[in-house]
Image 1 (cartoon, rainbow, N blue to C red):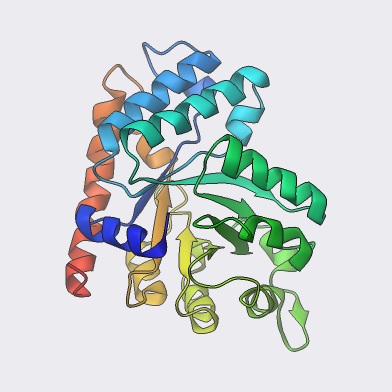
Image 2: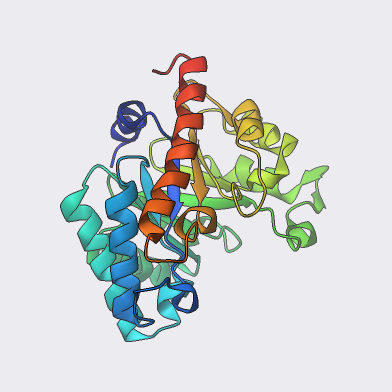
Length: 275
């Protein structure tokens, strides 16, 4: 998917919502079997209920890998379903890969060719040669970890390096590996003012912003500090949407929460004259 196509979809759906399909087998609702096949059925119903309100879906690999080969099948079926029914949806493999070049080439092949994801999250710790293999695919995206909101982020990301924090060094160095048409950055929503620091370094890139909803991040703050002239944001919510209900009406509850967020985003898009 191209940047233009993504931006057009944001305008069409009046939304920059990404829904995380972090489908935990232990939390599947009433009426859904607690099996790998049940995860696909759960995902399918969530997608059917929310596809017109979001522009992206982001499965976290851990929830599928933990189930072995059956989990991978449910993931492949989920992505195939999205591609068949809603090809305008941007798909994100939340895999956080990052290894030496020849290994990264195979990770890229797995997620971009075998499963046809549009993008993948990548860890930058091993540097340029671990990231470039993903960038060699046309109309595919690397979403590089830059500034996360977990407590352990303080261990390295904020460590001073040459007079500036390591996360700023990651941004400065990595922005030359690709460009705003094939690279995005992960920036935690609970970091507030620091989102502005990121935007100052990468003004044109899209930011994938997790932490809205269950993690307590503020959509208003994200927009205040992270907005650019093409929106430039994919704001992710996972648990607050997919687990909004635990009964047989879980899909309707998920839709209601997604709709609430989409309406808020619609107003923000209008305020910024995008729609």
